[in-house]
Picture 1: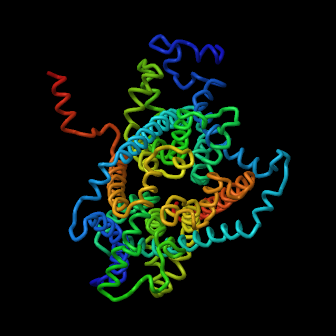
Picture 2: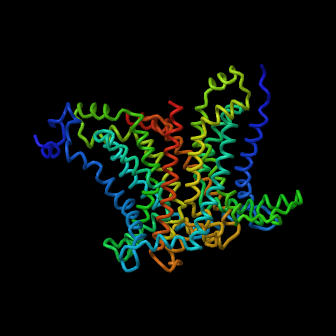
Picture 3: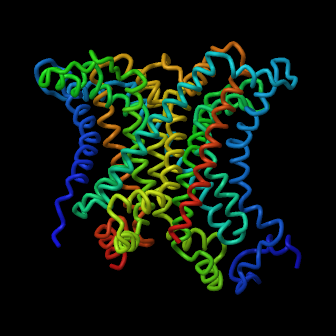
Length: 275
Length: 305
């Protein structure tokens, strides 16, 4: 029996594709219209020639990287230890790591400002360094659900208990087991969590704005109020960056442990080593 | 050997723990491994919430009171909550229906196999494409000078803004939210859609059910808990959204997150402790919708064992 052509599904998919693609195309076209009567990259040039753009982007990139390092250093050993020694604690850790999904960012930063404000025991917001630290801590909290899930999934796909027993029965110290056996096996999960953290915190607005940080998110909002074509150019670039982050994340998330990032490159390197 | 000795014993080749590595670090010491995580979460996640909760029940002079909670019933705050809840309900409903239709089309719709991964991958990106850039994209699309607005006017002679539509209004926001709500719905409902087995349809058909009867009496009741659960997840997702609204409408559009944002910036409510109550109300709504989501998800998963 020949199946009839799926008109309904085709219609749904085409409409959905239009809804998704038209705003992207519109934004792209809008970003090219800065010069009257011709299409040009003037909006992009204008964005890149701005010192504020570069400095806020650099600030947010550093803050995001710091959040990745702190987050990974916090989550990876915990996920490992809980699976190895405290399996009964796993639901608790999982629950705590999911809590940030329930707490809206504006509530979280409100709590931070009140707790670490000028009249508190630990007045972090009175100094620049302290406020930067608070921003990074906020990003670590916001990305905790994603980082924990990524790393814990990575731990689940390898048998860490057996690996640990094997390493230690061969005489490896605890530190060496973690650094040379466990870490290489979950590295791709950590990296996949890292890209998600990066894409969450790079253009983040609420925390950065309320903590008065010179970050990319508040800069975006400011440009949106002051300019016409630059926001479209920035949206196109941000979308491309989100694509890159998500693509890399999916690549690392589906990669098998031990598989190399650049197969040929490492092959060449190991040949050199052998020589 | 005491717990202290085992833990502080030099770890290396001469370690007596070799052969039974999991026996080391017993008792108190094994808790040390999770201490940094819990310390961090206590300080930067739990303590702020406790501070806000405590503040919500305190008067300006520090004594305990219910005045702040009662003050939530003042007309402008009720209006904010009502606006937030209506906007979140509408955008969640739109996202649920469209996402469900899309999931049906790409999973059960008989389309070529490449359609599914394309949409799922795109959804992974689009569900994270929220915030300020999304607002910019929609201004370039449906703003007064947006591409769609202009094409509709020049090509089809249809003046969108003459119909009363405005991107910076309720329906404009709902349409913008849909850009991350529909992909999120697609991502979370896909497992449930995959769980609909061909055998169920064959069983229904061999018992004489029509296509319509199969959908209304078998398939839809089976995925209803999942759909309701996803609806609540989308609701919570919309409820906490701030950056998109702020970039579109500035601080004019007083949904609860915007009011709280303004309050933190400059005490617009003229009562710092009312801000705590406002935050507590947000958390309460998020907790309720997320807990219901989990309950419904557990119920839904019974069919997928």
